[in-house]
Image (cartoon, rainbow, N blue to C red):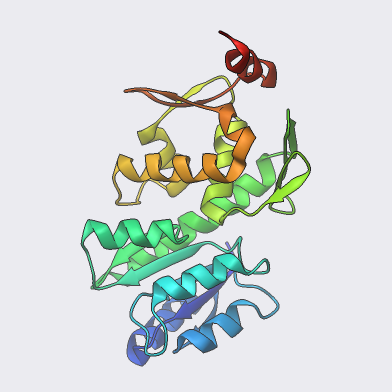
Length: 239
């Protein structure tokens, strides 16, 4: 498996170690030791396939870097693994809420990080190969372009939000438990709670506006994408 990994890490020794191991495993590595350099490298062609982002950087916080990457149309779809010495759940939740796709707490094993990177590359490549473009009521999804429209107005989604939407939409009519979504959207190795799934579904619904009604909550079970647009419309019109 090939791919380009951008490492934004101010600890030079650690970044160099990661670079060596990435290249030894057949991956292309780029290094940036400041937030500014990282943002420039992330937007440079060819775009990286995965970004490994340290939370504590000398010029900007990793959360702010993540937020800016998600605000930039060129870098919005790039998966981000956030690395930090902070291990409290609140730090993980904040990381995911600004757009991180995975979270690794320092000190971590390089082997574990490589496994997470490879899992992310596999998920991205598999989804791109298997998920078709989709039109469902007022919702339109173009997976190849990583773009979503509601009533022909484009909706800006993070890479994780887009993957969550396509996972639900391509399994419409079938209940997806929170544990299933954690496994298939975040990856089985993601060390987060099911409450994070609820947070992301809530944010996704808000961004989708009227199309948010296509995602149904089944209390105590999980979520289900409506089987047809008419089903959602009929429920809204019912007295």
